[in-house]
Image (cartoon, rainbow, N blue to C red; front, side, top):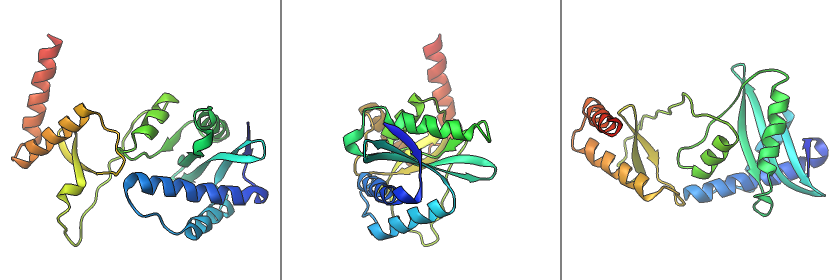
Length: 208
């Protein structure tokens, strides 16, 4: 297996895998993917804008890619994808390590965003040494719709947050139970302060 920097010569491989990445993601989410031609054009734009893009090659076959961008003086992993037939062979890790080696020439940190529903991705990134920090996404429905059934309820320090339900979710039974109980708690008027008191009391009891 070889990791190479993307060139004009293998741009077509990157475009194909970029479209495959979004097709797989949209299937997980239960959404309809966009047209392949749109994804291929996006991939070409990123190449021409000089994003850091590396391909993994198994012989003459493109097996995966990683794309990094630079914004706000930080480097970000935008996508990491390994074709299904090549998974479980350490290719994703090798792509990440190659990207990290390149970033270290310029900075000491590499960032990424992962949707909380994507348990496989979260597990992978934690396995290769990444830690959860900072980001919370907010939205305001400018034309309010009744979408309550489209979300799970989660919390951060007692704050009520929502995450979209996916078609192919991998939550454990205890996680689903927790989200259901949270939803019931907040829907019945439970507050952040009450939630924190309940959790703190339970933790203190466990620690004693």
